[in-house]
Length: 165
Ligand code: HEC
View 1 (cartoon, rainbow, N blue to C red):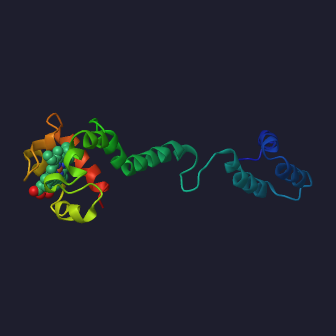
View 2: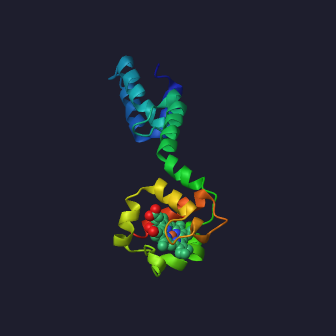
View 3: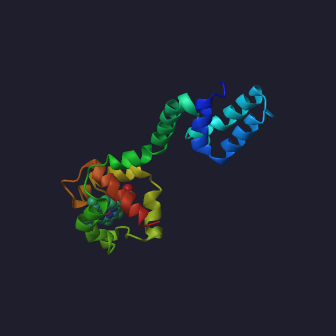
């Protein structure tokens, strides 16, 4: 690019003192056109909002799209959580499971007791979910939450595990 008067004017407004100095240098003919071009190129990006680590200028839109994709990958877990449309696990626990899992009735592992939960957790979520759905030992099918979906039961089990580790 050439260091035109128009550029100089724009530059003056944007950069004030720096460009004023540049202008003075130009008037004094101490700086060659080539040098001015180089300076102009160096100061030009000041007008473009560039974020460190991102592509600048024309490629900016592309860069932002890439950044968005990255964000969505890292927030996939959060999205999966958001996709859960069942009832709040805590409410299900308080309404049904608490009957046995607070007192330990009939040998139920008590909420908040890591030692009692350990052998159950060791079976893994899939096995525990199956056992809750069909019932195990003294626990009736679905832990008496007969209208619970498998998804709701799974989240409630996860809630109980989280409270018991
Ligand atoms: C009537 C009492 C009772 C209720 C209500 C109850 N449970 Fe249980 N639960 C038990 C007992 C007893 C065990 C231990 C069963 C065993 O290992 O023999 C148990 C075990 C479990 C286990 C471990 C299963 C495994 O595979 O080791 C999970 C998970 C569980 N309950 C979740 C729930 C959830 C979720 C609810 C509510 C939706 C619920 N329970 C309601 C009595 C109950």
